[in-house]
Length: 602
Image 1 (cartoon, rainbow, N blue to C red):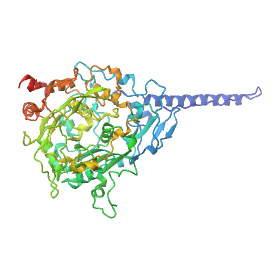
Image 2: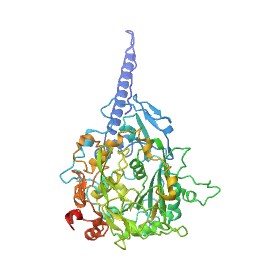
Image 3: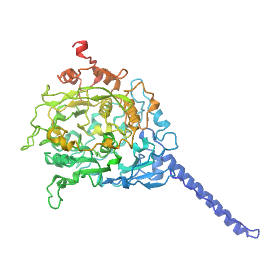
Image 4: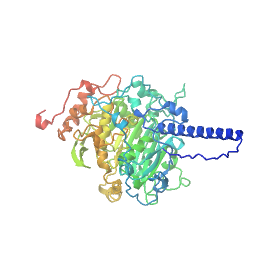
């Protein structure tokens, strides 16, 4: 809040002043008092307007009075570059200053923590006995789904951006570093999933079509949109990666229908040292057929100065903010090569599940020997499947970390295969997955733990995870011929000293939200916007842990889960409980509990 001060002018009147002058002075005084009261009232309304809003709801009456829009994080953005030299910070005196290229000093706030949390944020996020949030949906009207538009770009959205405080600097109690970022397409995920199973009708309202309806001209056509025309948003988080532009090039060059594809890149670079992800190798004027030139209108790059990078969770959070209602959502690393007609292939696999809540996800196979250079087709008949995880120590906590995953010829043919876990390096789903399970803004310096957080949150909202039957892209690991170049690529943890310690509290929050650290007092972690970045009401985290043999109290897992998953037994047992309308697997009908077969027998 900006504090304004006003001073009243003083006036004196001589004993010889006329009555008219006295009356005029009285009127002037009354006018000044009324003016002060009016300004005070406006200031009070502004203060109320900026108070935290429970459940992220709009204060409609305040909005009408102030002629403002939806109450949310803030205001505006510079799309192309959020450079360190262009970033504003607010000092202890409330003055707005520019942040230079030097590192930010660790300035201690004199408040009681500076974590941005408040009593209402914590009290509004209590859990009931089922592990679900107490969220009163009685009489609640879901907000309208934004109109489906295509083509679309955040470059065309003046005024649809907001100012946020950099979470890494906030966690360190530095002076506020203000970033301007795109607003979410839908700001409140709870308004969509409503802590219950999302209806198919609502799911069909999310997703744009490359070809409008011939009768209504609407781009929102649900499953009446032909699969070949359903739009795809590809989110890429890149940190100083020289292969980012090659990844984008392969996305457009090998798509069967690139017109239905839009790519959003969060490009964290040092300008002058690293090549931007949207910079073609030659000027477009001399070679306009380069993919970065031909499809530049389908490419949104949000550039961030590398010293502001605080890990993949923050970068992918920004990527989620760039989603604009596409039918499908795909997440990929920045050093990946795609196969010919990848879009047609992965869409057909997604639809083959018959599961509207399906999320196809895996650890990608290495690029070496995987793609025919002449045809662009895959040379592999194997695929990885996510089933291997165990506890490890780090950042003052114990958390689950996925290990190496088995890769073999699929045991289930004709569709993707059910698996328990989700992988961040590759994910493909319906667009509403982004709306319902947004990356948490308050998890700086998190690397390990990201995948369990998104996976378990998605599970509680009703999503099911599958291994693709066929790989549509391959990863450039630092192996073999790629090792010399890939090993020279820097990583975000080169910023660790600047944000030292922030990851510990972030990990407390990550684990606390998914009920994975019951031994930790809830007061040790920040509950701000926990509902927005939290659980759903379809299933509980405890059901996930019980089903797949995870002991969150003693920090142990039942080993050899892959014998249940990779063999296809999980798929066969659980797919029979897919709901008739395709809205996910009904786990309330499943009483299976995995035990290590080598200890307890089959």
